[in-house]
Structure formats: C-alpha cells, structure tokens
Image 1 (spheres, rainbow, N blue to C red):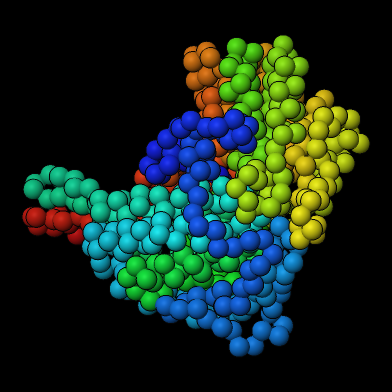
Image 2 (image 1 turned 180 degrees about the vertical axis):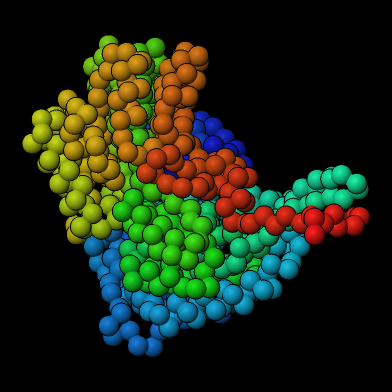
Length: 542
C-alpha cells in the first residue's frame, strides 16, 4: 500500500462500539478486534451478489464526465471478477491522445481551483466525504466484486477514503506560511503554493482507499489530479471522480485514465505534469523515479515490504496471536505493510504455533459478499499461482507447512473458478529461505524463532525493505528500545496494521520515498515560495 487501514478511529464510525454477541456471533467473529466487529455488524442493504454484476459504462473520466474511447479495437482487455473468475468488463486503455486530454482537463481545473480559499476547497471536500458515506455500501460492493476482498474489509476501506478526505479538508483551511522579521524593519515571508497537475498511480489491493489517499492531500493544497488505477481493479476510481464532481469540484479536478504500463509511462513523461505519486512494486517504483527525474519532478513512492513482527516471551500471547493474524491474512495477505516475518522467542514458539494454526484453520473462506466470510479470493489467477509457487518453493527449501497453502474451491458452484487458497502457516523457516526474503503478497505467514533481543534486531533489519515493523511485549522500555532500532517507517507496539489517516504512513530504504496521510503530507503536494521585503534602500556594492 499500500498499505491497510484498520482504522484506529473506528470510534468515529457509527457502529464501532463493543457490544454483546450471541454464541454463534462470538464464534464467527473470534478473529476480529472490537473495532472490526463494529464494521462487521454495520451492514447495509445488499444489492449485489457474486457473479451478477456486468460493468458496461465507461471507466475513464475527464472534463467532468465518463469518456467512451471510440477506437478500442487494439486497446480493450478483459477485467475479471476474482470470486468467480468470470469477465467483469472490458477495459478501455488510454493512449497518448486520451492522456493528453485528461492532463489538459486537469490543467484547466487547476487554474480555477488554486485560486480558491482553503475554506472553499474544504466545503467541496466535505461534501464529497458526505456523498461517500451515503454511497458506502454501493462502493464497498463494487470494490469486493472487482478486488475479491471481504465485504467487511471493503467497508473499512470506504470509511478510510472518507476519513482521509475529511482530514485533509481540515488541513486545507490552515495552510499557511511563515513571517520572519529582518533588520531595519525589513521582513520576509513564505507562501505555501500548489504544484499543479499531480499524477496518482494506484495499486490493485486498495483501489478506492489509495485513490482517496492520493487525491485528498493533492486537492487540499490546490492541485488537480489525473489518477490511473491498476488495470486489474479499475472499477471504483471513477465513482470517486463522479463524487468529487457532484460535490461541486470544477470539471477536471480529479480525472481517471485507465490502462497499464504504457498509459502510466505516458503520464510520467507528460510535460504538464508537476508531481507523481505511486503505490506498487519496488521495480516499477524505480522506473517511475527514473522517468520523473528527466523532468526533475518530485515523486512519492509507497512500495513493497517484507516486514518483521517480533513477539517476546513476556507478551500477552492472546494479543500477539491476534496481531500476527492481522499482520498476515487481511485482504488475503495482499497488503504491502504485512508482517510476514514473524519472529517468536524460542520459549513460546510451541504455544504460539498451536494457537495460530488453530485460528488460521478456522478462517472462513468463500464468497466475499457474504457477511460471514473472512477471506475472499486473491486478485487474479496469475497472482494465485505465484503465491502457491512460493509455498511449494518453501517446502523444497525445508520449511514445514503447518496448515494451508493449497488451492481452495468453495462449495457454491458459481465460485468454482474463483482464485481462492487456504491461508498458510510455515514453520522451520530460516533467514536465507525465499519465503523469508521475498515479498509473497499472499496469505503466507513465515514463523522464525529467536533467543535474544540483539539477535532478533539484527535479523529483522537484514532486508533491503523497511516499510513496517511490530513489537509485542509487556516491557514498555524494551518496546520503545526495539522500535528505536528497527529500520522501518511505520511501526507498531502491541498491535499491527493500524494506519489512522491523521498519522504519516511510509517506509525506509527501498520501501519508498515520502509519506501519505498526516500533516506532513502537505509538504509533498505543495512548494514553498520565499518573499523578502526591503523596507529601506538597497545596500549595493556597486
């Protein structure tokens, strides 16, 4: 992520309070935190079921409306529904003409939007947030159909998108510079100004959330945006574009262009683009950084991770088990910040494994639009095969599969061609194994044992990536000491994968550049102008 939002401020969501459950409900939600239970039982009216949606409307959007590309004979490609394996729609990929039209639309909107006061921009953003809340269930359902994650998680993603827009609406009202008094009555001041047309390039694991995480700070600062979703999950970004338009944004403020690598390259090379923000793989991030460097354009890169979770023997084991499950199996394990290297102190390894395996086997896999489902389908057939290949490679290298790691066929006949697998726990892992070194991006937990704090710190930091890290212990001094020495940008103590929109998210090392969310993100979507005002005469040497 891209990162996942298990929203710590679920207290702001109407059903986030803990309540009493029946025996059946307790069993069904045994793997969930209190906050997630709130989202679980905050259900809306179901209008879709797996295998029924066919998207026929255009998914490209600029100049204030959906755009149907006329000549798509060589540009159309199928988009699949992960739950069923059937074709959901045909994607119209944008070429140079379409990309230029979208950028010109964004440029026109920028000239209007940049001149509005922060309060005026905030009004539009707050109205957009209200519309998202109103359409929460609709957006979540389409996200599920296009991505394969459970409806419970999709609702949280929509909530995160709304909260992000609300947060940056507030930031828009307080953008300011600095006054500096100089000698002789002269002074200087700074102005925080927008960049121009920003490009956002999203990943397939959190489509609507990433679209909001990139667009909200950009437009709060007075920029416009052209957003390219992943060609695997193109369906919900256009809904956000419509919502911004309905909220009163000028035509072209948020545009959507569909396509793959070629479309992304056209955006990155366009001379009128001022900034690029990308979420995705490290290799692609490096290519985008190279393309942006030719125009000396700033970039924000949120890339991959192979993050450690360190569990000390004095921990609350129940809490640590829950944390490890949340660090590995949300969104079918397709989360960039996941803590897939689970380091457990040797003395508690047997107890930890016993409980983790028991709970992993109890995860309900199936139709992602059903309320009981805890794990839906992986995003595509090639990706499913890739993840299963990592499990097979782990077995060849000596890891022990304690559970899962196999293809799964739900009992519902319409799901037989979906992209499902059983969540996997690997034991006997060593630091040199492929499953420990490489990002799998699937529901595969690698468990490693350790003895001392110094040892586990050295091993946890032995990675070119540094997106996230977690520590579970009752010793608060040790917790802070370990966190200080972990080389990761987003860290957690006695929890994992909690990313409130109020705090920055991003990584160290090859996991990226810049941050998303939090007040600091304003700096990545604006530029600073310094103005020196002379109140006397010029003191010249000539």
